[in-house]
Length: 136
Ligand code: HEC
Image 1: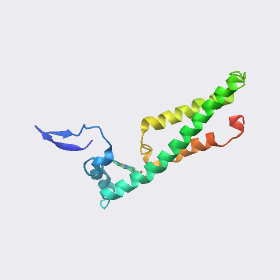
Image 2: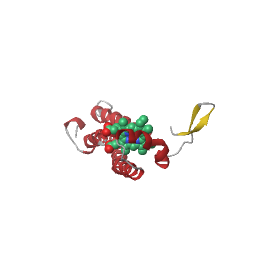
Image 3: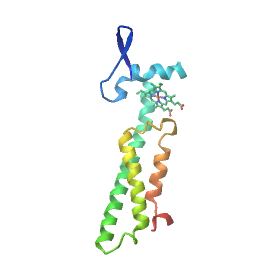
Image 4: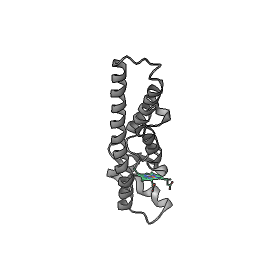
């Protein structure tokens, strides 16, 4: 949290909940400049967008795929398939739902900063392409 002042010798920090990108100078730059003295606000902002924008596209693809899977499961059940028949699909649904919920809660793509979007996109590949694990 960005320091916003001092009171009786203690540092006061910003508790205004909003996008951290709106306070790059106070919230991010001081620490990043310890690692690279030349980094500036615009570079940090550009890097955030470089990570965030593909992350959002992957999130959209994942959500579409997950909704498709849920519709397929509904149709399979309506057609008389049992949980045993759908074992692999139900297992993958639980996995996909967990990852998507995590991504939704994390809400930026920046938490796994250094890893970028790769863990997320690997999971999406698993669910988008039919394969032996999916029972397709
Ligand atoms: C306490 C220190 C600290 C603060 C505060 C901090 N960061 Fe970081 N940040 C790091 C470190 C350390 C890394 C990992 C660097 C690495 O692995 O190369 C990192 C990584 C990143 C990355 C990924 C860099 C890359 O090229 O993959 C971005 C983007 C980023 N931070 C943005 C921010 C933003 C935006 C803020 C403010 C909201 C912020 N950071 C606040 C220390 C900090």
